[in-house]
Image (cartoon, rainbow, N blue to C red; front, side, top):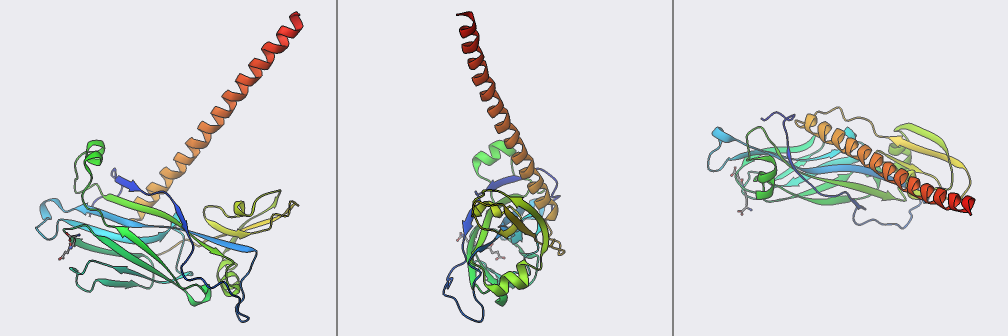
Length: 277
Ligand code: SLL
């Protein structure tokens, strides 16, 4: 297995948001929905593939892992009952069911294919399932080779998708037994904010937009203790994403300041002109 701290060739899809399928919004008396709340669960899923180099043979050129994980190492096991990966029929027992983290399957093979992923939620969540599709990629594209050099046994090819599972109007059982059991991380006075701003990257939360000051409460996911083979790689990627976000914020702040300076200079010139008249 390669060293995860080496440079990676990476293809990342943009974050998409999805609502679990087949949601029945009709209320049921035993387990009603909490209408004013929303819970956001950021996950990542995809594949990591290493070329086997000298160890490669005709049918086993790469070792790869397909995975589902919580962003920022969040533990998904309180929400997820099982993750099923549907592999290509050329693999023995292609339906792989994982009932605890890390939700990942590692195999060796020769070809690329689409891997069906089905996430089944715990009964208390009250929603059925979420279906995703991961594109297993073993061979870098020509432009990736041009950018990062040829494939080596140390450089993993990563295809990662980020997704936000959004639970609108969560079931009371989910809200009380799962979400509210999580650490409460933030409670602050909040102004005229939109409902959507009550959910940040690693938390779900609630609150109305009545224009009045109100308390904003968010919940942190517990850290996942089960180690993924690729944990160092995930941490490296997430640290880089945070750095990129910070850089983007700094860049925006700089642009705003430059624009303000320009406007102030123009106003100053007008005032100077008026003084001279
Ligand atoms: C194709 N899309 O039809 C591809 C299918 C299947 C890959 C790729 C099996 C390895 C093994 C394997 O890698 N299958 O037999 O252990 O061309």
